Length: 332
Image (cartoon, rainbow, N blue to C red; front, side, top):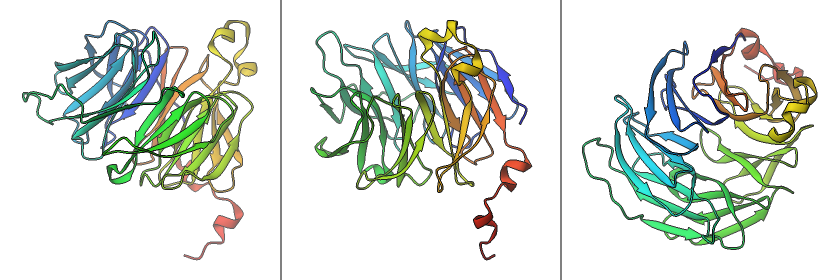
């Protein structure tokens, strides 16, 4: 798996996102810009400029018409994907840490940071997938968690629930129509650093600074699988087609300058989703992996690091041929 190395940012990466078709890859970093690449060859399609602070999150609607970004300048911006034109801006009292479209692309989920006396808040805005149409200024719902800071959030299947990760390691489930808290469970010993759903959205993976990743059932938030690593984890993703998960992290960024890449444990780690075993590692980054995104077709993945690089990997034949002995015994 020889990677395509992309150097489009001057600061650490914060998120990567493939569009639904998988032909485009969006990247955000702490340098105020959004980059868009063709995922098959790494050619840069364009750069979206307009934020005045570090970018924390990016998503694109299912038709690849509109992209959304959340940033430390306390705004969400909507962009026309084709031209890079900013078509709308929402303003908030604190930084926006997460943005995510629902399955239909007609609602946008966002969470704002808890700081300066303001509570961390979840917002849901209606979105019109038309680059020339006006957008609503008011959210459909908003709710806060005063005692427990939000760190991550995502939509469940059929837009029924909003799943959130928290600073204390808990995971919560809210009614997406009313904002009512339905269930809250303790999953990790430290903060939830990532939350990504499986393709069918019936289960999801969380990662944490406590060096573990866990797969949870979306309906009841029961822990189904646990993956133990040897370093703090920043990100985790579930692969389509193969029963794997990919985890990334490494030693905290503040300690990187005193540590070599081998001691820092900056590899992407592959685990078997069913058996929970680590099956391989992929080196490359010169700092912690901050985010991993898997191609929607399961044909590859991209990683973004503290070193400012994006590495795009296309899986080769050996990846798809790998099987446990018990898997080889499956009847045809």
